Each structure stands twice: as C-alpha cells, then as structure tokens.
Amino acid sequence: MGNNIVNIATSAIATVLFMEMYPLYGATISTIVVTIVVLIFGEISPKSLAKENPEKFAMASAPLLKLFMLLFAPVNWLFKGWKKFLALIFHTDEIKPITEDELLTIVEEAETEGGIDEEQSELIQNAIEFNELEAWDVLTPRVDIKAAEIDAPLEEIEELFLSTGFSRLPIYEDDLDSIVGVLNQKDFHNYIKGKNTPVSEYVKPVIFVAGSMKISQLLKRLQMGKTHIAIIVDEYGGTSGLVTMEDIIEELVGEIYDEHDAVALQDIVQQQDGSYRVLCGTNLDKMFDFFDVEEEVDATTVNGWVVLQLDNLPKVGDSFVYEADYKRFEVKVTKADARKALEINMTVTELPRDE
Image (cartoon, rainbow, N blue to C red; front, side, top):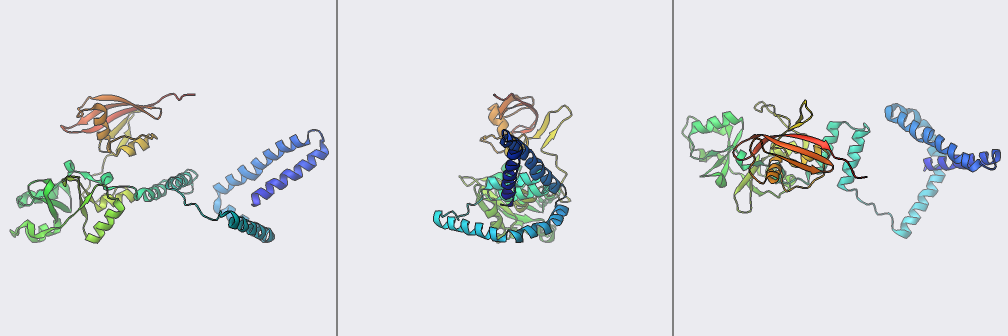
C-alpha cells in the first residue's frame, strides 16, 4: 500500500508542476521523468542495496518504517475495514492453497536471488517432492540384489557380507521370488558362525509391498515393523527389487556413504571435449532435468531409455540420435554387459528455435 501511495503521489505532484512550467508538453514530460525516477530511485536502487546488505538495510530503515506505520495507522485501519466489507459481500476471504509447482518455483527463485544456498534449496525441493515418489522410483532392481540362499554354506554367506559391506542380507529359498527374510550380520557372527546353528533360526521377517506405494508410507511401514528392508513385488507376486530405509532417507538428504562404500562415480560428468559420460543406472528424469529438458518417456533409468531407442539389448558401439526441447542428443554406448547398457557417451547440441 505504501509503495502505491508514494508512486501515485509522485505522479500527481509531478504532473501539476510540469503542467505549470510547460503547459503544452507537461503531461508527456511528467510521464517520462516520473517513470525514470521511480524505476531508478524507487525500485532498482533500494531493492539492489537491500539485497546486498539485507540485515544492515533492515536495521537502518526499521525506525523510519515504524514511524510511518504509526502515522498511517488510521488510514490502514480504514483500508482493512473496506477489505473486510468487500470480503463479506463477495466472499473473497477464502485463501487459495499454494500448489506444489508454485512452491518449487518460489524455492528456485530464492536460490537464484541468494536467499538460500544450493544445498538448502535441494533439501527443500526434495522434501516437497518426497510424497510424490513411489517405491518403484528408489528400488534396487532384482538383477542387482545381493542375497543368500537359506541352505548356503556359512563360508559363502560370510564372503557375501565381506564383499558387499552390507549389514543385512535377504535370505531366500530356491530363488529370489521366494525371499523368506533378512539376516543381520551381527546375528551371523554372534550366533551362527562356528556354532553350526541353522541360519533359519535368526532370519528376521521382511515386509512385502507393491511398487506403487509412496515412499513416505513405506518409511512409516519400516518404522512400525522395526525393519530396514522392504521387498517390492510385481503383479504376479515375484520379486521386482528391494528398498532400504537408507534409500528412502537419501531421497531427502542426498547420497549417504559409510566406511564400506566406495566413492561412487558421478552419474553425469562433462568430458574435456564437451561431451557427457552418463551412467546408465541414472534416473532418467534426473538426466533430463540436468539438461533442462521436459520429456515423458516410458522408462525409469537411462538404460531403459537406451533400450527403447535401440529397440534391442544394447551393445558397445550402438548409437542413436534423440531430439527433445530444441536439443539434439547424439548417444553412443561405451560400456555394456550381456543384459544392459552400463555407460553412454552423449553429445548435446542446441537446435534453432522457430521464430
């Protein structure tokens, strides 16, 4: 309100003065001069200074603002009364809830303007998007599950604990579609190893959930069940993958490393020649976000996207071109195994936009 009053008063006073001085062109001159003055001294300069030194500016201007608040309190009271009167007549007092997209935009603007740093922005955005993520989005796929058969030799189980660095291992009968529970490393070393105790006596129950379950709900299930691992099942009851409590927490705070973790390669790295090395286990939405591309593809990972484009299992040397959002992606498979692409090299160029 104060900003509007000052701008209107400035325009009115300037118009009167310039009309007296230059009767023929006073209105035009007033418009030009007031616009320049208001923009420079009323908008750009004070806001730039306040942005550079917000605390000092706030402390210095606080006494003056308090004085104006007292002086204009009666006027403010009248305007508030009028606003309430209009709200009663037109029922405009309903507050529209802010949408998720609007909230994300506010956070991004706050980061751009320096109000929050990149880490704070990422944490807030992760928290906002947390409720939208499903178990499918964070699971370790079946092909990457490290598990032991319930009748496996103890030496084999011990070696699996050592090689993976995991504190818990899924235990199955016959195959991964018949997971019966989870074995804790401490239980294995304290009660099973060297004592010929059956593994089955210390296998703890595991929870089974659908991949469509929201990870916020899954986290509560894990907490209620006092367990750290959930098995994700498909529509036929088979094992699609697993989700750990750590996987869920990492969606909020980022990658968590412990003493057993090797430092992971970055998912997307720009090379010296300007091209990008991309790990094919990378989430596809994450890759598209990295390149500022909005694209809907029926795949979760970069490998899934590569398979869709090639219409075949990828091999080293396979290549294709993909265009989206005025960007051209020249993709070449640089690492692969018998079943999937492991790494691609990608050159990204901007396409001309239609005028």
